[in-house]
Amino acid sequence: MKDRVLIFDTTLRDGEQALPASLSVGQKIRIARQLARLKVDVIEAGFPISSPGDFVSVQTIAREVKGPIICGLARAVEKDILSCAAAVRPAKRPRIHTFLGTSTIHREKKLRRTQEECLAMVAAAVKLARSKCGDVEFSAEDAGRTERDFLCKVVETAIKHGARTVNIPDTVGYTTPEIFASIIDDLRNRVPNIDKAILAVHCHNDLGLATSNSITAVKHGARQVECTVNGIGERAGNAALEEVVMIMNVRRDYLNVTCGVDTTEIMRTSKLVRDVCSMPVQPNKAVVGGNAFAHSSGIHQDGVLKAKATYEIMTPESIGLKENKMNLTGRSGSHMVKNRLQSLGYAEKDIDLATFYPKFKALADKKGTVYDDDLVALMEAPTIEEIGDAYRLEYLNVTGGTGVIPTATVRIARDGKIEQEAASGDGVVDAATKAIDRVVGYDIRIKDYHLDAISEGREAQGRVKIVAVAPEGTFTGVGTSTDIVEASAKAYMDVVNKIARMRKYAPHLRGKRARARL
Image 1: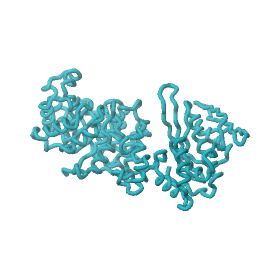
Image 2: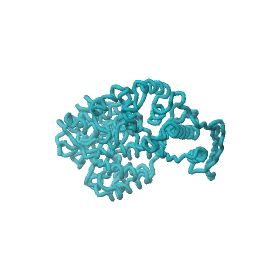
Image 3: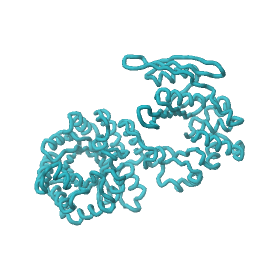
Image 4: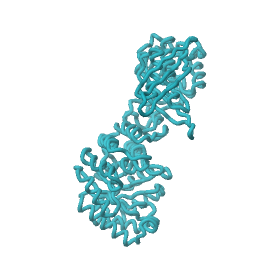
């Protein structure tokens, strides 16, 4: 189909190259299986010749992961191609992806070959790969800086000797959409056998144009886009799969193309890659960032409450999220605050906005973000000043390490009295929370734990955010410290104090808030 764009995922090859340490075979298998559930067309599983571990990873994925084409990368040299062929052979649908630098700087400085010698290498490499595998892709590395006439000859040669896919990489993110469009147009108009192969693109993000260049190429006839989950990759990264796919999905009216990706698996895939690769996703990242479906402005919140499409061009559900996120801050309007209070179980007759909203604004100015449990306390407490902490962490000491059982001792003050407890756990953070539990006696289960660095250097501050579930509902706690364990204990104590406020001020809502949005 001319309007079908293939999604070639190179998270496990190009994406992995950006990581401080290689992924294990097990980690690669986890990601590959999720990519199959995402229904990408091609998984580039690795660079088999680069290490014995990568060879095993590619071979294992080829054997165990069903659905997508399983591809391995090889330089345009015999040993690479033979290694790649052996690695992908177990796959039901194997592919060999071979490449050669074609720009002047690559030819003269890296390869030290003439144009004629490079053309001969392309011919030999593709011919050998085709003798070992029916599906061969060739990439002209640094195509964005390759002389146009020579690039046309390279592509023609690769197709002539058996390449089913020819890839045009903007390897260093140098081109702009207009220039990249002209490259694609030239290849389609000047290469006589271009109709015998799929034209692919592989764009890097050095100038922030990877997605723009990829989509422009699609508009001009490219029918395979090479990309990575969360845009991870060398230097500034690759075109982000989620961006490319959702642009084609949302702007189908403009692009007139489709792809086979199951978009409802996007968020699950993004989180898996984030966690396995230890590569955080910036909050304002398109499609999958924490703020991608969050609304803080009162004007925006009011619009979304009336009609989601006023400020959402795609739905959270379309990428696998349950709902959007309405941040309660000093910018939130009274309509949003009232809506949230009603979602927490308060009847309209119980909400006096004229009195409540100024109190909310004052608390928002003081705290920044107001959570659901803060709203409940604000509704029930006579004044803002009374919303204080019932418990205070006075002392924390932990021990841990190799061969040592992690333990923690805490002293907690309440009503002028200090209680001390100790506990062991699976780690020092777990031990600290268990010791706190022994003092306060609450039934708390941690649902989500997230750590961010909020400053730089060896003494960097860490912010821990904990989402916990108790019989009283779901609570969010935040703690900050240069010590991760201390930050975690402070966040957990924040949860404890919110439960205490709920018990004091709103016992009638006990258990009704368990499904409240955070």
